[in-house]
Image (cartoon, rainbow, N blue to C red; front, side, top):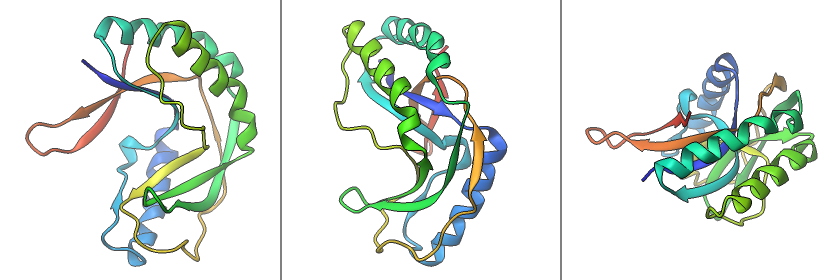
Length: 169
């Protein structure tokens, strides 16, 4: 069964630039695991393991929600979630995402699917296993275009153990 989450994807060039910029933080915490550019995204809601049929139903139900998604958002400030040891890029204005987040979560619930009810925090995970305090650096501010929410599946490569995300169509 696929393990899925709803997300907003970023343009490839933005992901490449973010991943490149995040590498500067490796000097501060060389043991942190940095997110590959191909895996950078903005999670709206985590669902978990569901059947392939339910994943396709949810994917189709998310498509009309693009009308609620802000046209663009600014990425730039850096933050940490200390308990989860996450280094992230913050988004602004974060509250502009509330309508799409609320409707994505309502759609998941309406379909009778599981939903992780942790509060939404607008961020893009740059690194995991971050062991340092808040870094004294920032990222260049970037205003990036957004498209509508999509359903993503977590896939683990059996040979390497590496995680990658792919869109459920």
